[in-house]
Amino acid sequence: MSAVTTTVSEDTANPYALSHLDSLESEAVHIFREVAGEFERPVILFSGGKDSIVMLHLALKAFAPAPVPFTLLHVDTGHNFPEVLDYRDRTVEKHGLRLHVASVQEYIDAGKLRERPDGTRNPLQTVPLTEAIQQHRFDAVFGGGRRDEEKARAKERVFSLRDEFSQWDPRRQRPELWQLYNGRHAPGEHVRVFPISNWTELDVWQYIEREGIELPEIYFAHEREVFNRNGMWLTAGHWGGPKEHEATETRLVRYRTVGDMSCTGAVDSDATTLDAVITEIAASRLTERGATRADDKMSEAAMEDRKREGYF
Image 1 (spheres, rainbow, N blue to C red):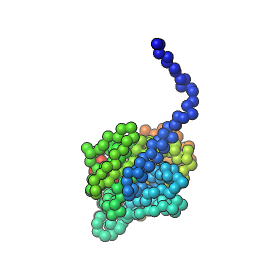
Image 2 (image 1 turned 120 degrees about the vertical axis):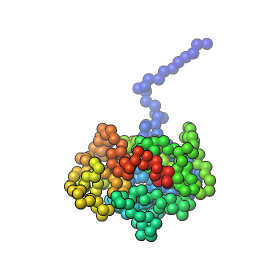
Image 3 (image 1 turned 180 degrees about the horizontal axis):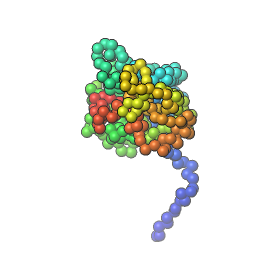
Image 4 (image 1 turned 120 degrees about the horizontal axis):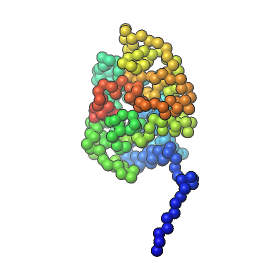
């Protein structure tokens, strides 16, 4: 009997095929539902930055028309951008969500943390984060980290086990084959979960455009008083910058990523629309963190060192 080979033209549209963004969305929705089924007290890290905004949007989709069955958690450094905090609060109120805020300033006031000489509070977030997880007994913590951002995040699994001290050991990572996720953990341990780990910065922006997701205005070009420090345009503000020898100037800038004001650099840009931002990102040859995050430049292993201590 002769074999019959049937070929299908690449031009033939498959009505059941998922687009690239649909596939990423489907994977993330599956992860949210998997966590809801496996864990007792999940929490979503929500700062009002674009990745956490997309993550919350996906969570809303995953459980609609029911409400999101997770609490939100934000570690507030006290040096966050006001526009982002305003967006955070409006979003929480709009969707009727529960938000826990862990304040770095409160830890400083209580003598549990000390200000750094360089003024940045980003590395100080680890203690409030880990203590909030322990206090509320969260067993799964959703984060908006993506593999394309930085090399330590590139090798971290979607389900990332943390020990009783919230520390990450890359050697304890588990295989994740065929979208099978192992959430098993001992008492006191928890799992960090990254639903958009496989997304790129461009994917995030294209999804934002497709879904019509509102963002803080800080992500689009605007005039801002900034100063140059180590090749980065930092915001002049109450956090202690600039120093005496650092002159400020007003420039047309936007932010690719949003963190602590003291370590998040703006980029020169005239992109005031989603289309313009997407075009700009498509032409970029630097990752968003590589181009704009001073806290990742402390050493070659800065991110991995912080993750081992319990960082996001």
